[in-house]
Image (cartoon, rainbow, N blue to C red):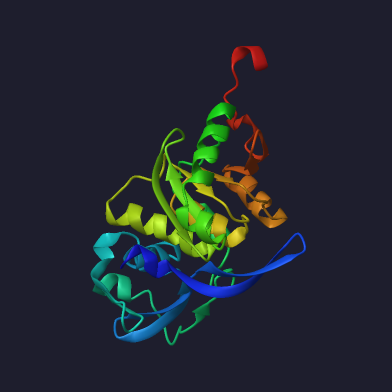
Length: 269
């Protein structure tokens, strides 16, 4: 899909310091993508029309419908018809039940669920609170992350998400929905068999329980956001021994869980 399909131009009246002018404004495009799973309509995602294969794979991966790319028999996107077709292998298909058709808004929430007690107990055993990162690395990588979305710079209308090893940005995506942006990077990682147990999620959006759940379900030990976490997300992160950092912008950030994560130089201890 062409890069310019994720934005559109509209005529607007611009008011600046008492002056009115007629200009053309660039706005992020919104796209309604219907996902069919094994021939049945499964979900409609309101999204940015880019990296749609990764979005579909990542949504199914982060929601627990599939566990790896081996569960996918076929995945195709018909851009003209706003349709994604997915065929699951038999074992993965057995986890689906009944009519689960739903529409997931760009802000998320509907169709996304936090972790329950059983899921917490069955998570990969790598979130043991031993994750560490240097404060300078947090600030440096988030500064690079904040500059990376040209679509945000052009429109101001998207959230961004990335996977990092703590030093470099490995995968980067943006979307009108913070959940979609996360699903896109998780989908990319799943499709290339990227290990996740030693990665960090970077996000521009609010960290709520459903965002935290998507990260935790795949054993990612840390999430760093430019924005705020919710109280429930903080409590969930504490219960999971995850590292949760918020308001990471300019020269500041807050650590909300796993306070021992900061690898401080000896002089700062």
